[in-house]
Each structure stands twice: as C-alpha cells, then as structure tokens.
Length: 242
Image (cartoon, rainbow, N blue to C red):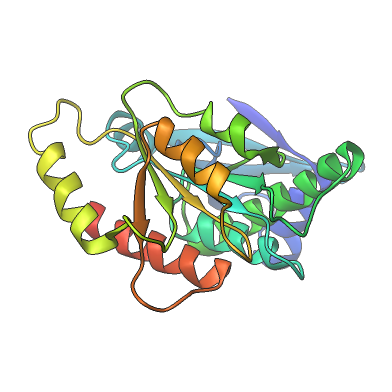
C-alpha cells in the first residue's frame, strides 16, 4: 500500500531524518498504529511516496490502550499552553481540552481559536516525532467550563483540582481510585482532570463540578502555577497507571 506525505512531512523526512529513496522508516497514523515503510519516490511538488511493508506495535496498543487521561486546563498566560501541548504529547495524555473559565485572562474570538488550534496540533505532531509516542494527543478548541463538563461520559471519573476546604489529598484520592478500579473489566475507565487558570475556579464553577459528581482534590499546601500543577498531576498518574 502506498501513502503520500505532504510537503511539510516530506521536508522533515529529507532534511531532518536525511532519508532517501530505498531507505526505511517508521510511520504512524496518530491513533497508535505503527508500520515500517520504504521511501519510494519524491515528487516535484515536494511530496514523498512511502510503501507500507508491515504493521508493527499499533494493534497491541489499540487493544490495550492502558490509562486514558483527559486534561481540561484553564488557558495560562504568556503562551504557556504551547508547552502544555508538548508535554501532554510526551507524557501520553489522550486529550487536552483548553478551558475558558470565569477567571481566565486569556479569551479568544472564534477565528483566533481556529488559528491557535492549528498551531497546537502542529506542536503535538512535532513532539510525537521527538518522543516516539505513536498516538497523538487530541487537542480541541477552547470551550467554556459548562461545555467541558458535558464531555464526561456517564459513569466516568472526574476530578477538580481546587485547594480549598473539603478537598481531599491527591495521594488519598489515588488510593481510593485504585481500590475502586481493582478487577474492573477492561481496566480502569477514562479519567477527566480539571486544572484551573491563574486564580483558580470560582465558587460557582466548583458547585457545578460537584453537582456533576467530580471529586475535589488538592495537591498539598503549596499553591502551584497552572503548568506546574499540570506536570505534577500527569507525571504521577503516568507512574501509577503503568
């Protein structure tokens, strides 16, 4: 089977990987499916044709997806969302949903959302090449808090990271989740983690989350920035889920 790379991917193959006709490489469809392919030809239009020779590890990942982690993050200031997209890809996050909450400083018009989404998706692809993670993180356009809550499926687990009275410690929540997940058919269900923007979630958003059966969890006595909290939360779950 022949597949064709677009000019951007062809440029990466030629200039960065320095591959030529007859060389072999690994390719992925972004869904966890991998294959070995041979470079067949380069066109005058800047594209490259590859011949798929055999499928590799994708079938195993598709049948055993492991921990499915979905992150909903209040968009931080100063372009830090670009870094979060990159780290989400490297750490194997399944979905990254940017949030516009009541206290979000960064808010975008629809045209800007479409433009920035293309940039985030490009960052994810580049991070996938560097990290070797064959499944691309799904990054979506920014949405409001209520719309994001509606993305959680019936019976799935949601967590709101919010350091106030009544929140349980992250380590205690993990122990509880592990106990509840023992013996679950097909492994633990998807997890939906909400991390607020600078200033955190409002009281109204907290009430809305609790009404949707999310658990309120804290990360200790230190108030963490959005990007720090993101890395802490995901890194711990990556270790726990392995």
